[in-house]
Amino acid sequence: MAHRDEITAFLDKYLNIRGFRDDSMNGLQVQGDARVHKIALGVSASLEFFRRSADACADMAVTHHGLLWSRQERITGQFGDKVRFLIANNMSLAAYHLPLDGHPVIGHNRAILRYLGARSVKPFGDYHEKPIGFQGTLAKPLSVENVCAILRRKLASSPQVFSGGPAKIRTVAVVSGGAASMLGQALGKGIDLYVTGEPSEYVQEQCRE
Image 1: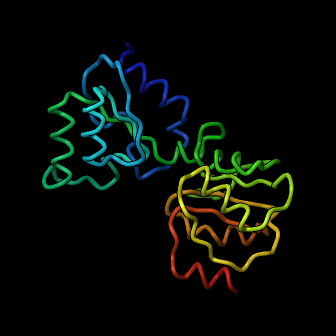
Image 2: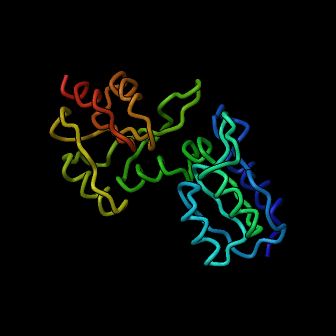
């Protein structure tokens, strides 16, 4: 068993939440039981995730996309259902958005480059004047098909590819989530392949051009 506040204090410091300008209210968002025996980890604070966490007897849920952002919502509708569920089950919710994106050890952007065996890894992708992604050089050049095969296996998803780069990939930049707009930064640095989480139609034309 651990104390709720000790867990969040550790995460707040380890993920350096004060070092990011973020729309997410990072850290503890909903206060539940002070005693934590089990923690559930998820990407987004959905009602289905909360229900499964409760079924697993979790006392705390930690997500990448939480409930509280810079624009407050009324506690009604679907948002209200989520808040009421957490309170009814005495479950805490903590969320870490950009601090998790930009973490050099456990961050998912860094993890993707690790899956690809990238070297000379350094920060990439400025957002509010602070990098939230990473870039690196592959140990050996790979085709886009080879890279996609690795990502498909590691991430259990099928990448959507906007072609236009070289036949062999040597440099890769990664900013997961809705960061298609950062393609220009990758182009400016001469990156061969940019990996992000959500496509945008206009980006396809940028890649072709």
